[in-house]
Length: 277
Image (tube, rainbow, N blue to C red; front, top):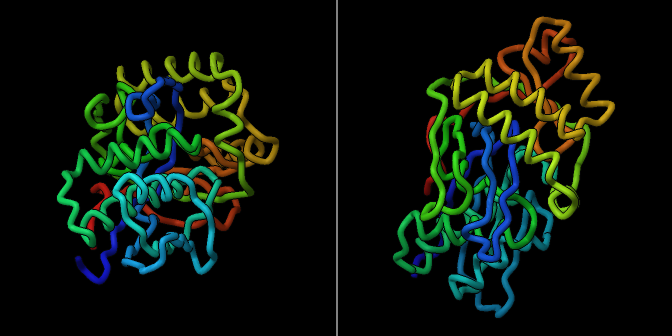
């Protein structure tokens, strides 16, 4: 057993998706596409003598169900301490990042000797079971600009990617409940997601991704008034922007938000997936 280990997991913005439930959470998931970010989550795991595990994000003790499930699956008790500049519940895949980072770091600390695919499967299943996401974990394990062609964990899914890199700006106006959206009627959302995916598979470029994402957000009826107004401002400034799924967050390529008069956070697409520090 080691004293501690830290994993970095990139943030993930989903541009569009379709939901694909299954009785087995490791086989459930989503098709879609998104951007992984150089802004992400550092997750440190250390053993604890307490029977109960502790989860801390940016100094605040929280209950994050996917993290608890990962620790239970690995049969360990630990203190999990995460730091991130990304807000929770705003479309950046923070809960998925914490689940995946916990799996990677705990596997190292407790010498569970599991493979990457096994750990990603555990984290993905935990995230799906909690209702906090469907595709973030597999995308964050991959890095880059992943296209999720088939749903599920690594043993089930099929991934491709857009072979580009980009500067990314974002502004977040608040939270949206992923669980509320996913537990409701998703037929219209999934139909829009399938159409968006078809467009990007036909033309796997960042411009195609942004166009498909904007169309999806409108057709899935997920746009809030603030988000729609901000995307319009970026468009008027000749930029490319869309909504992060699922959060009241707008992301743009290049200097789109800056050119529109906003003061965004700035990062870039991440060239690699989650990793131990």
